[in-house]
Amino acid sequence: MTYAETLRFLMGLLDADLRPRSVGRETHLRRVDRLLARLGRPERDLRTVLVAGTKGKGSTAAMLAAVEQAGGRRVGLYVKPHLLDYRERIRVDGRLVGEAELVDLVQQARPHVEAGSSDPEGTPTYFEVSVALALLYFHRHAVDLAILEVGLGGRLDATNVCDPLLSVITPISYDHVDRLGRTLSAIAREKGGIMRAARPVVIAPQPAEVEETLRTMCAEADARLVRVADRARWSTGRMSPAGQTVHLRSRQDYGSLRLPLVGRHQALNAATAVVAAEALAPAGFALWPEAVRQGLETLRWPGRVEVVRQRPTVIVDVAHNVASMQALRDALLEVWPGRRIILVFGMVATHDHEGPTAVIAPLADVAIVTLPHHIQPLPARRLAETVRQYTPQVEVLEDRAAAVDRALALAREEDVICITGSFYLAGDARAHLLAGDARASMLGDAEEVAVGNAKGKSSPSPSA
Image 1 (cartoon, rainbow, N blue to C red):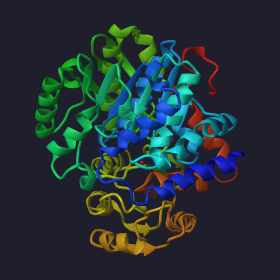
Image 2 (image 1 turned 60 degrees about the vertical axis):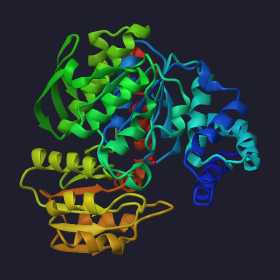
Image 3 (image 1 turned 180 degrees about the horizontal axis):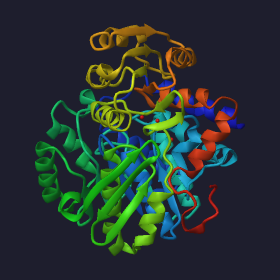
Image 4 (image 1 turned 135 degrees about the vertical axis):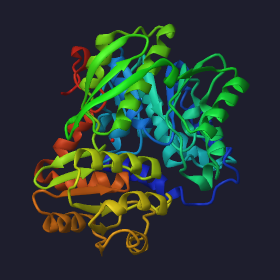
């Protein structure tokens, strides 16, 4: 089996996700549970952390992994989706799973995946198989800690087959309302399903309705509630296109830290990650201030208000829901005030597009609407109809590279081009912009994403 054949097998599972399956979302966990049983239960030997939420869960998971690795641990990190290469989803100590290793993992798992066709719940999905591959890989590498970003919801997400030492819930807002519920309380019920009895659950600041629901769930589950707002104090200093300074105090005063990410929301993510690291300490993961500093300051996390070109300034961002689009909007207004903005915008059909469009489109002087590379892209002309309610000049170019090139042709040196709406659009645009050395640059960034060179390890200097 070649690497190309491996990717075709995985993508084939993604196509299969569109086929009818057993009625009821409760079948999800049974499918991945059967698969892991066939694979020898790798998850049972792992010490895990689950990170759920609507906004910031990937960044928070990456920050926590960075801090723990800087503390000398061998850390597995599973995130999704990816920007350019499937391997970005699975890494140990910041290194992406190698091509040959991924081939071997899939060869081991494939007969057990295909055996699921005879199960009542059907064959495992692309996302369920991805989680199983990550857990199998972490088991092979005997990681000290495996940190997994939860996918859709939490209660019935494939990652919830684990028995986490710690659960983390980042800010919750409206997203996937057709699957998770149409009220914040209902959505919180789904995401709060990762709690475990007698284990800590770290909760970032939440809307009042969410806060009340999560408190009730903690009491019902006999979980130990740890509120970030009770434990930590943080403030942001100067913000620039290269990042920001954050002063953070929790159980210890960590002083002023250099966080190489743009946006005040990232300071909250950092505080949440540090409180989570402190909550892990009683389980044998002692925390030192230098690990916090080194982990956060060496963090690289592409596609998050990331400047990939200057003059004009070109930013790629993976925002795709209202909350993440609000964070992007706020960062644009703070760091690049008064600039003319050209928006390159594309979304997938499984996300609400009207809410995010209402947030970001009013900032744009020009919008170029395009089509993300996804099995269910939102038709560009349909998205353009909504964008025209807010933006004076709107063009439609379904070809992603052509859309980026058109934005560059329209831009003056002092303008800002913002490319957003989907992981898939951000990843493709980033690769296109970085041109000849794009792939090498992207993979080099991804291999450093969570950890930099934390604690002098030998690590090289991410989609739903």
